[in-house]
Amino acid sequence: MIHGYRLKITDTLVAAFTALLTAVTWGLWWATRRLVHGADQTAERQLRAYLGLDKGGFRNDADFAQYEVGFRNFGTTPANNVRIRLDSDLRDADDDRPFTIGPEFQSYGPLSPTQVTVALADEDRSFDTAEWSSIYGGSKRLYVFGEVLYEDCFNRTRSLKFRLMTEARFDSARRGQLKFCPDGNDAN
Image 1: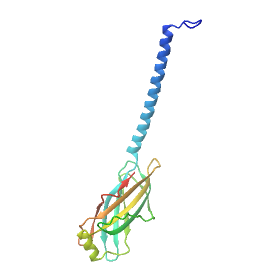
Image 2: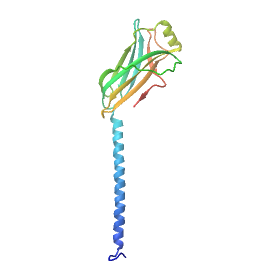
Image 3: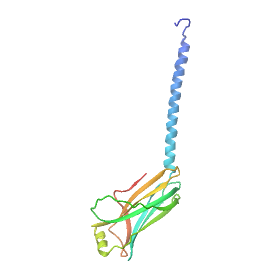
């Protein structure tokens, strides 16, 4: 007994119940907050633009070599302010130097869902018969690599880095497909 006041059992139960109710309410608020945050992240992953490689090819004419790389928006919203930079290098098959991409971007504007755009890059020269024989024989590889920057509908800058290489197969006109390299491909 407290001086001048008698503590009733019902007062104790009401106080305990109020404390329990406060704790449960706080727990529900915290769980709801996490759920809303998770739903926002899921919505962003489902709705954003996803740029990826669609195809890659090359051809060697008498005066120049040309590479084409197709990019597709696999997402459900447009990719805005799409910028692409391409570069190429003919290397020995066992050359493991890092790849350096040139500084200049080509601007392609927006890319709608499922839309494809093709970036072209030209060499200032064509490859001679000995170079093509070494590519076909597997001692050299022609690499086409680069980076794509774009903004998604949430105004976040996204990037796609890619590296393609020649297969040891091409037709008599020295045209062929490019395939993915085992490394050098990354997206966010």
